[in-house]
Image (cartoon, rainbow, N blue to C red):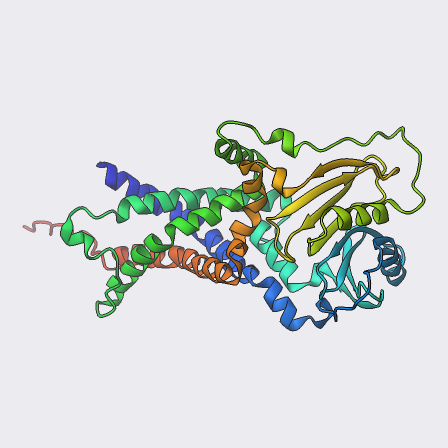
Length: 375
């Protein structure tokens, strides 16, 4: 068996084994790319009128949120921008909600059950196939790793053997037979989308596997590990002195002072004495790359970490960029359109590949046995 035939066999059987999962993950990813845009169009409580006064402190907004959902605990609070409502994450056992409030007035705008939210379901479909996370994660990750191997093997099979074949590798012959069109769609679209599909697939794996992201970031740093930059500070639980106001309010004031240009602030969790209060200031609302990171002692409010974006190494900045790369956010709305199209093409590849394989076997005539001689 030649090398090319061996690659073809590998490509075929890996495709048949993982095709359905790749289809589901790609389609759900294509839908999720525009989640914020669709939410803004269908969920009016996400937007508020900008007012010429300071936003309310997180402790005030958390108190309003927990009053609306008795028995629930407020943990994370997200200030989503000057023209957007603030979201308080509420939980009680397996129940999880988002309370959306006007950050200027404290008015409760909406309490949303995340378990019945459409895009939360799409996200869990994308990440876990709606299976228990411990199982679904492995199933999806194995399928994505298989998809990466198939992209590489597909490029090997696509590579033209001669000049005549080269002319046929870059365009679809629409006037040809349906069988040939399907073959061209699989090869041509797969080629054009392969580089970006690899970026999306690998960035998704980096979300699942921190060691992979750290390895790539270390390589970008020329061998210098980003582990020290990722190290989480420890909170000294023996310290008992408390500030005159809630720690989340101390953290909020510090973020506003240190990162005055940040549009989006994430503060939490609260109520865990052994864990620092974890805070991030994002340069642009609903974008996650450019961010300043802070940690505070959960009892005293002491600053445990001050890590502005400008001080980070190139590898750490790449790590911060990973989610925006995965979703296309790094290039704004145009990048999301590209990610959407690449995801649709990725979803089409298992379908066209199966149709090509089925077409080759459907019309294959069975061997006819020679007639037995008769006396």
